[in-house]
Amino acid sequence: MKAAFGTLNEHLDQLGDGLQSLARQNDVLDRWGRELAVAFAAGNHLLAAGNGGSAAEAQHLTAELVGRFESGRTALPAIALHADSSTMTAIGNDFGQERVFARQVEAHGRPGDVLILLSTSGASPNLLAAADAGRLLGLHVWAMTGPRPNPLAEQVDEVLAIESIAPTAVQEAHLIAIHALCAALERVMLLGPEVGR
Image 1 (cartoon, rainbow, N blue to C red):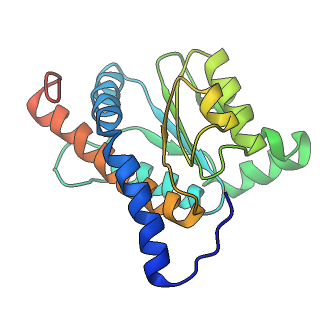
Image 2 (image 1 turned 120 degrees about the vertical axis):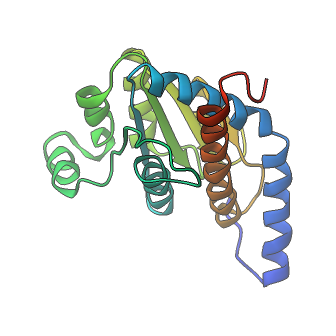
């Protein structure tokens, strides 16, 4: 999936492919918004993780939920698993880098919680281990990835896969997907769970 950034116009073409792919999956984001609203209403939490730029985007998601997106709704329980550097480095040192997220899923995850994993490649070993841990514990495990097929897409309950050859374009489409997910969630919280059906 490696593609050089190239010129701005070339990048916009690659981003266009990704955005068209995202638009075709609007129903996934609407469904996730409804399911998140139900999970939060039942007292469940959202856990999120990614590596590098995807870590920043996962943290962006949790910030929108704990803080606010567009409405003045209540704060929502969402945790970015990579945001605690002491925990990350301790687990990496004692258990290996592949376990840095899985160990935290084991600590924080409860049946009915939602785990969302972001990866442009869909091949990061630490996210694959987190997906396995989440499913074993009864979490709803979702992923935002780059093009299918990829290993993470096969290990989660549901995936939003952005079809673009450029990892940068995939990451940019993930940010739009995060905003769309927050908007879908807030519509449900304000107007009721029948919204978007």
